[in-house]
Image (cartoon, rainbow, N blue to C red; front, side):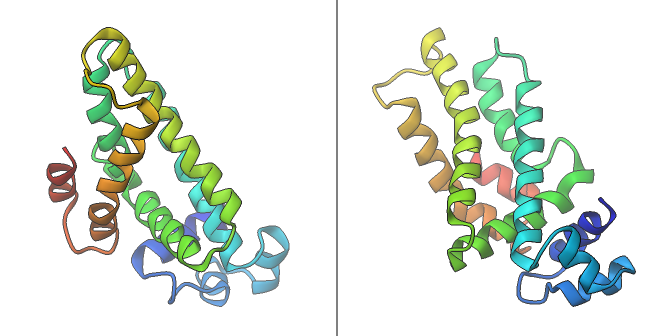
Length: 175
């Protein structure tokens, strides 16, 4: 956990190109061999950060009251960007950098697709609840709508991740 915490900080404070097992080992006060033995290489470290973020988002979205589906859709954006909990901004930024880097490399492709599907599943459930309750109208399926929402938010999400805009600006653009 200590190594992963340092990895999140290093990745969030720099970018994937500057992030290395050697730098992490120095920051965590362990050997690079220890990191390779406990966790793995740079890409495996980044995948672990992605997994942590997805699990955190899933648990937070589940805590939002199902009766308020439109508010829950907004809460999904808030949770994703961690406007609700500023202490987790480092995790979000590090995981977004990791997702972006692993996706561009094509590394852990199946795992990244599975994590993306998990994120979409929560959003699809919220959309379905809105459709069933009559608060969301239209013929677009929950699956299609959730993918459209994600696609429309990606550029803005990366702008926040790489510090081109603030969280407040990200939220305003997404909502």
